[in-house]
Image 1 (cartoon, one colour):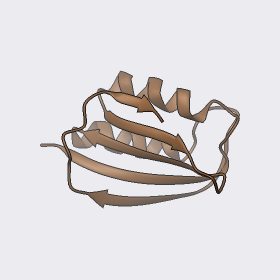
Image 2: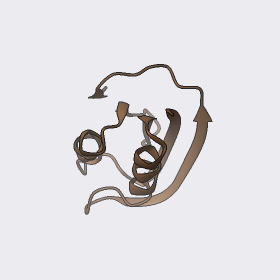
Image 3: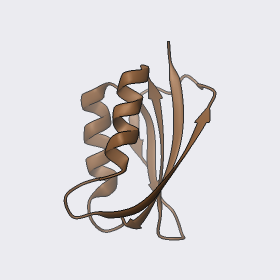
Image 4: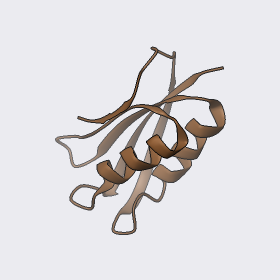
Length: 89
């Protein structure tokens, strides 16, 4: 079974290696998708894969890397789109 979640992470999340840390963690968990900085200062990511792995990534998003200060995480369920690999956009 494959699930997909879109997250928008707010706080001090740009300029703290959030995207690269997210990519590394996603690869470790076998999760596909992407992560990107948004113009409003947030980071947006899509996680697609096995439910436990995707939920682990969603959970990680609430903390991020050590330098991040996450103030909020919005999570939306989406239909899987057969993502392959994980990229920083």
